[in-house]
Image (cartoon, rainbow, N blue to C red; front, side, top):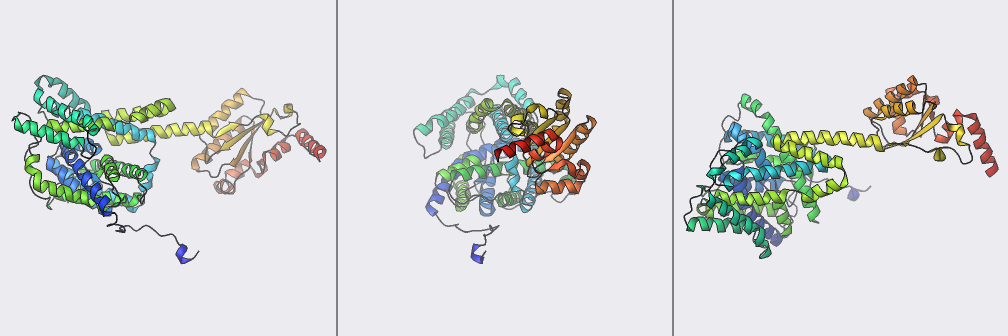
Length: 553
């Protein structure tokens, strides 16, 4: 290979193409900023913090992640999934400790990226991601019922108590707030049929705010938003070790969810554009740096936002410059329109989030899983329920365990197949000669749950004295496979049945030799082909096979 043929390694912080496609990036960034404005405010309120924190997060995190992240078109900011975790952390610890947890989460994300663990997100099964996405949608929707009904009651850090609290206070609902929320919802639904350029959420927000201000309606509003850019600030107690110990679990939760959602968003963006694909490890580093820096500007932990990223791509964004423009445009909006934003009714933000949550529900995924397999559908429902009743991180853990158990069950079912006698014995050999011989074909890298299956088989067919495992299509075997094979050997030995291996691949044979299992089984029980093994077991079959071969020649 010549020097020119050597594959180029991706640069960790590359600015190649930063200023290419300026027009598309400008359009994409500005459009994403317009869409991000109401969402940043809404998700901040949903997180239990001041609305300005959402704007500051979108500005700072959006610019930092765009420059240092691994996706050229990713838009970063406050999201619904992160809001679901943050509302509980804010209620329990307060905003100052949320800033510390955010810095810790960012450090964890950077460490994951440096350790090149970004590809792990690809191993999360689809039913698990669909389950927690749909669970997040339900939590966001129900979490906005207070603002929808105009109820001024404190946030609850758990789903069911919060929902019950809303239901018990329903008699105090504010019909004016309900009407404004319905105006925003209706605008979100019907405005795209009139104009696709201006987001319906922004139109609904402006319309509801104008109605509330013109008629001087008595509804809860956002309140004062500083007409200034986010400035660096100190974080109290950030170097207190006891506080860090207290916040390690929330930080892990924020890092896990932030990493998963950001990488899933980057994968979605890859499918929408023909430009440079994302670098998972660099994306984790970029998101981590954003979360480390944002708390020092009064922001909250952020992630890659799927909806805003998709809008950026569809509007022409092709490079990371679009993400920078998105952040700068939001900063300009804060400087010029902050007094007007202070009059936005909370009910209007509730309407926006309710529409967002309904659109988050993966209806197609639910239908696909129901039509495909009930087991995958059950994993999705389990993850969905744990997300709602407990928390997102536990939901992912439980979902992965359930999906892993299901995978093991399927591998056990699919990788072992009893070969029919017509395929095992040479043509012309009487089948009754091979009643004592059973041949199983093993496919795939490992096989699980096999020992018990063979014991059951031997109970049903006690005349079998020889069990042949055809391993030609097993490229590798890990410790689990070794343990399963050893269990099979000992179970067969107790039933006076001999284990024979055929078609061992070099790598598998090397592992068996190193572990000592090959010596236990015996080299005399290993053959190159299944036919050789069968002929060695029954002289009559061997003679019949030789006779057939002679006649054919």
